[in-house]
Amino acid sequence: MGKKLYPSNVLKNAIRVREAWKTIDEGLAFGDVDLGRLDAAIEGIYKTQHEVISLEHRLIEVRNRRDELYLSAWDQVKRVRAGVKGLYGDDSNEYELVGGTRRSERKRARRRPATE
Image (cartoon, rainbow, N blue to C red):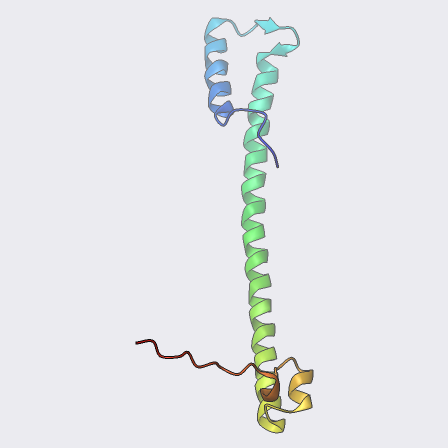
């Protein structure tokens, strides 16, 4: 989403203008903009903001549930790999089939020469 098309304090300004408008003249209108229309916009902002907050909370719940499922699946994958490794060995074709790296295909650790 790009740059917002409105300032961050629109609601605060709208409420301030509404209160001043009531003090000046409630029947005053500026073209098709009247006090009722501004009130409707303010109420719409409150309702929509409440809906956004509710959806954000729901999204957090769904993401947490997704993360729990990922953790559960990962735990099962690790257990299966460990079981296959224990049953068939860490250099077996079966271990490679379940996503493990065969011992014979692992990089050898290099020794660093001692610097004096």
